[in-house]
Image (cartoon, rainbow over all chains, first blue to last red; front, side, top):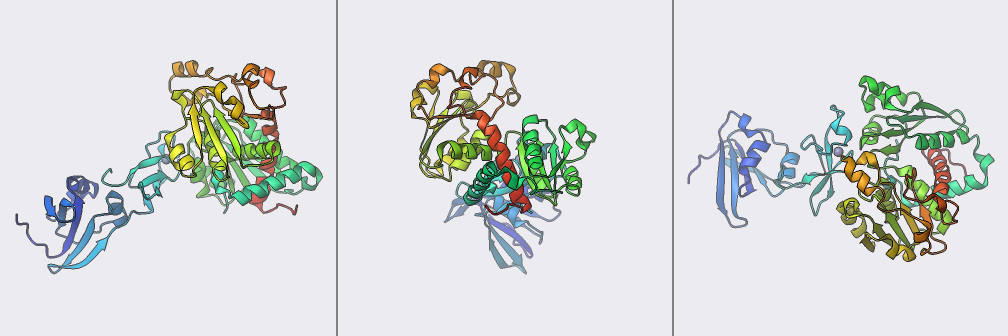
Length: 144
Length: 307
Ligand SMILES: [Zn+2]
């Protein structure tokens, strides 16, 4: 299968197979005017199969947001048709206003102006907890 | 700015010094009567809790300080829709230290982000209540003389019982603590307490529904109230509230120096005939709570004298 080469833009590689559509929505890529290619079930030596997203524009991507989704994704920056940069992600220590606390007894449920802050409390099990009430905010890793 | 929102905000050595200060207060009341002169404690109680508020206010008054504040949300500007952050920001211009209670979990975290003075969490919903745990620790210290090598039973509502979660977390930093969780299935200790605290610190524990079978093994029995306000369903509450009642019959099997503790108020989970038993320590906890609040207020104001 042939997908047009990008001149200047971003390629998100090593997305867990099946997660590309969720990531597309998570990053609000539907709001972009440029062409975006979602390539599913690409053969991968490392992963068996994987998804890839190609974005034909140099948009700003918050790496913490992406790292929270899946820290195994690699971000390739393409300039002049060549890969100019390859970024590896890590699980962010803190995420702000990405997930909302679901605890109905949490102060964030009544005070609208507060930021929703989650902190990584268990990197091994990838658990994030609300900075206010300590409720677990769902595990990272494609579960957003 | 230093705040105490959670018992683990205090290190083990800080808890040791708070206990040393409290013991010194008990022995030398006059030495402390003017320490906080001209200092003001604000008690911001967005939810009524007369017992806790009076303990804080008595603590500050006994240190020679004064007290301002409100005792329910309806008597504060939050009834006009003001946020916790704004209320606390305003009050921190008037007071030197704030003790706040709020029905929502994490409210003191929001407050501490904007406060110019130290905040003590005096209870945030079912979440934390560190000064209750300080009272519990001083009681254990005075009754047992140690925090190591104790078998501690927790009985009643272990699911919503924040005092239980806090005390387990405080005890997890000492050696040789055996935990016994006694509760109906519906009110079992939450799994995250087991994984994040108990197992993480390699604490031996058992879970049982039967109080009597474990009674002879306990050094401390921490009873809790099954709280109606934590239930969404009245029928569940009525069915569970009388599940575990400590009676003289059951206490007969306990060690002669076992300590019966309870964060109070009790409903009927401890029979009143036990109040005169030397093992009953729950009213001592009330007294100890005041001493620990005095010690904490001095620590946060940087006014603790030499012992
Ligand atoms: Zn929360």
